[in-house]
Image (tube, rainbow, N blue to C red):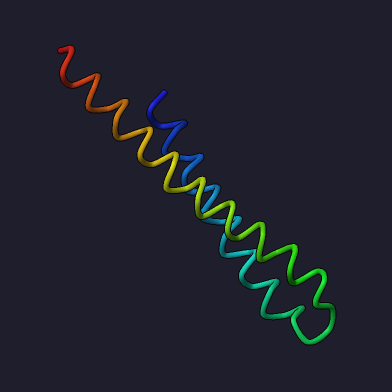
Length: 66
């Protein structure tokens, strides 16, 4: 279970980096698309930190119960 949680963290980081890349490539061409990818980047980096915090709490709870 913990490995799955760790993989989802990195999935959110991949989405973040892809979104930032798309913002830089689309900024001069289509600003509406760039704004959408700024939103995706913000949500994905927020989810990364949320998931990491959740996983660390889950691991700590598991260590305390052993």
